[in-house]
Image (cartoon, rainbow, N blue to C red; front, top):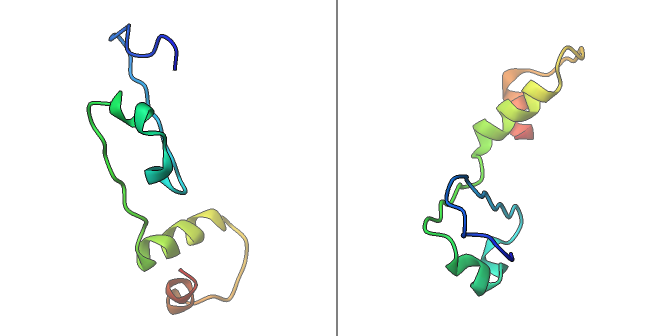
Length: 69
């Protein structure tokens, strides 16, 4: 983190996908804003999975996608 915060012309984005609360306190103190982005709900997860399957043929119904999500 040497030099971070001395130049205010850009943006520094720090993301932790697994356990953000375990980031070092010294690192977290350097940031002015903390934005928590919650995990997607069941329908959003279904949409993500459905989108990623692309044009692969399948016999899944909309209910199957939701259940998978």
